[in-house]
Length: 376
Image (cartoon, rainbow, N blue to C red; front, side, top):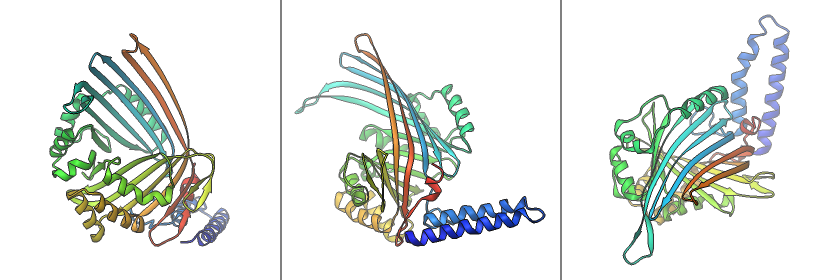
């Protein structure tokens, strides 16, 4: 759908809704008219924004506001370094829901001389967390208050993996800090393969469906080759990369690659230009139920090499759903050091507000995400 066509359709939608509401006010039982029209308005806005609005492969709700609260404690003594902390992320979405994610993490490191190399830190870094999707901001606030009283130590990661899902969270996840931890964690979840352990940094599990999402490493050759597919969309800059593969059993369902850039001034957001933001996010989702895409993904998981990732990345950019969003962010950090710096407490906040959003379905033109920016 081209932008001009989208604009005409939007004008038509507004005109139809205006007429419908005007007529409804003049007839008996008019209170039912807005309810009858509401579903059509929602679908019309979805169509204007582009994509298949009847399925789960089209546009998804945008995060219009997000707040992250982090508290971490660190301790250093001679050759030992310990840390533990909690991150609480609250995301308000354009469909009215709010996602609350709580992650607890821990680290135990020892300075050690490695043969043939300089002294370095060895040990374990693990994190475990849960995500809830609730209907409104008030419910989210009550949930965060409850979670503040329900600390889950990172030492329970092993039990977390073995026991399966507990509680009412919609998702649970674990993230690993070393290759040995990855291999053990994947085996505990029934996922095997040496190639898989090489490129996986974490796993998420959905409570209802049981689907598993592998969080692939974005800082290696494979991650770089896949994220390079979005270079033409986001441009250059300091980059954070997230790569996820969702599986139903051992069947690949969807691949998502997300690039996050620090930006300033006037920047390109899809086909448009915007200013006032400092964080640009671009993600592309590929339907892996497509046999050709699934074959490329399986080949990469079985034998993770950059050339395979390059081929998949090209197919991803051509056949995937792309969304680009610009955010204005604000971050604050407070540090409290004691015992000559041996003990440190770090508290940080990071807030983000959506400014602009565009989307593109494969084989169609870019469209402005009115369903997202209209709510921001």
